[in-house]
Length: 285
Ligand SMILES: NC(=O)C1=CN([C@@H]2O[C@H](COP(=O)(O)OP(=O)(O)OC[C@H]3O[C@@H](n4cnc5c(N)ncnc54)[C@H](OP(=O)(O)O)[C@@H]3O)[C@@H](O)[C@H]2O)[C@@H](O)CC1
Ligand SMILES: Nc1ncnc2c1ncn2[C@@H]1O[C@H](COP(=O)(O)OP(=O)(O)O)[C@@H](O)[C@H]1O
Image 1 (tube, rainbow, N blue to C red):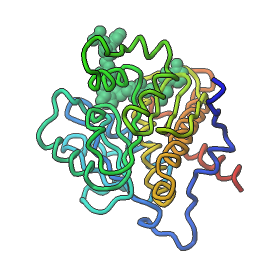
Image 2 (image 1 turned 180 degrees about the vertical axis):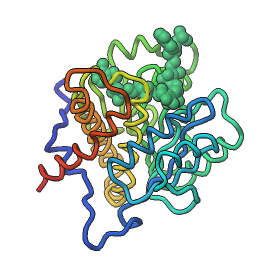
Image 3 (image 1 turned 90 degrees about the horizontal axis):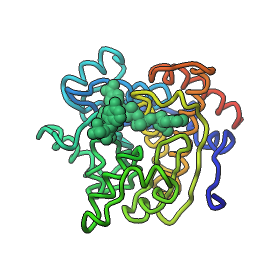
Image 4 (image 1 turned 45 degrees about the vertical axis):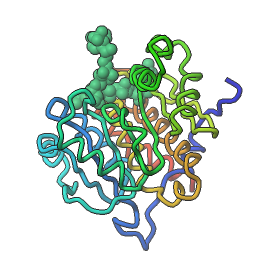
């Protein structure tokens, strides 16, 4: 573990973009979102909520009609008109095995847009198609599927059990073989940039192991990516890794505050996000 740097409040505090007097919604950063499906509309709501409460200039939700309806019911601030964005969140609540043609088209547009992407769940199979830096956010089963897809034959294929037994090592192998920043979720979240920094984040309680918790994390990271376009442009994967570790820290701390030793649901994490970001802004000041 010696080559893993642990990520703490002071590190995270350096990665919050605080609006200035001269800011407007566009200069703060706009997040494009293609998430959710008829089967999992809730994941779209949770990701958009996570991004909204972390802080971003605007969200363009550009996913399918049913999740769009749910997102708009919950967050009328969201815009469904296409347009320029500074970062993308794609894949949460989607299923690569049953992808409608409309979704394939939406995902392709995001992947070719040339702006950084957070790729989650049902878009992880498209990681090689991106035209800009990518951070992926798999759990250990999803990482096994990704790596198995790249194996030469079945005997090379890694299993979910292999990854659960040594997540740190597999996060490193994935970042090197896929050429993307990897955020591997778990009690300790491992963040690795290809050839670059390695961060271990242990910020949250095991109560975070609840449905939709990872969808919220995707939204938190999406907001951080969209509000740090300049840093990603300058430092590429090093910046993406710092942002990913910050997202995991914020998510963990929000889970800690929401839980206070008891059970939580994913929206409880969202409710604590503004308070956690406020703490970080104060810590940086
Ligand atoms: N509110 C929403 O909209 C939410 C939407 N969500 C969205 O759902 C999508 C799928 O994400 P996921 O992580 O659930 O699926 P995935 O990686 O395919 O894992 C499947 C594996 O789990 C296992 N398994 C299943 N049941 C099990 C059991 N009872 N006990 C033990 N094992 C069990 C199963 O094993 P098997 O049953 O085949 O043996 C298989 O190996 C994704 O897009 C995500 O964003 C979620 O975030 C939740 C909230
Ligand atoms: N035992 C645990 N302790 C702390 N955090 C956990 C634990 N298990 C899962 N988590 C966190 O909860 C989230 C679960 O995400 P994920 O597996 O994608 O769930 P979902 O697909 O239901 O949203 C991740 O952020 C992960 O780091």
